[in-house]
Length: 293
Ligand code: NDP
Image (cartoon, rainbow, N blue to C red; front, side, top):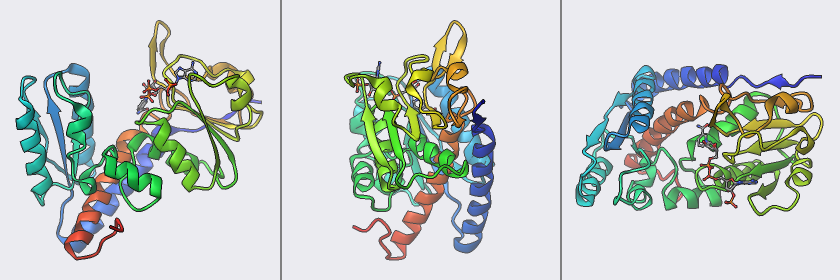
């Protein structure tokens, strides 16, 4: 039997259409048009493409594109001043500092300066704290996209055995917390895990976020399990995931392809976060404190 494909492109499209409808309703109700300030420092071609895609999606969802571009040799003080200006600007709902930033700038330090209620990448220490505590806040886009894919594919998380392979700050760790918040029984695997296949085989929901082409083989998958492949690896055979798709699809119950699985969800969740950020700030301006501080 062959696993059912989880169509990330279709699900991402549905999320983007929903966000566009919710943006229109929010604007009609409050008079506020949510705005996303992408900040690109330098001219790295890959980063420029990512930022352009985010800006286009933002406009398509009915939000303002408030992009800012600084030269590669911008001194740290200039980047800091820009972030502070965007933090203070009520027209800016969300701020996204495109990483990596050119040396000698420190991307983690600069990201940490973003107002947590505008932190649409969910990467500031305050956003991480809110995630771990389970209080309202902005969650990192790719892990949030994984949860969205699971929910919209009817995969039950409560009580399920979830195994995440990879523990990066960007994907693996936040995803572990999101799964825990949904009452899954969560296991983290990484480069020092002994007998990865045996641990992964326990999973009802197996997520690979590693960056090693086809690391997860059929021997690591329980029959009928849901397999989510976050990996994006450029190989001589083209783009492949961390899962050996052809072998695993014969064993799994549901599986995401690469490309067309998790990838398209990241921008969809960025749009959702930008709207959520606009709501957080609107609540703050109205004297409510949705983040529970
Ligand atoms: P990182 O390199 O930051 O983290 C990789 C993780 O995998 C680490 O925790 C590492 O363990 C673990 N790991 C490495 N080798 C092995 C192994 N042989 N067995 C078990 N675990 C291993 O990667 P990211 O989390 O940033 O990205 C992971 C993948 O997801 C990449 O392919 C990336 O391109 C893709 N990605 C896709 C996105 C999207 O779809 N939009 C967004 C972000 C990433 P340890 O901690 O012990 O070193």
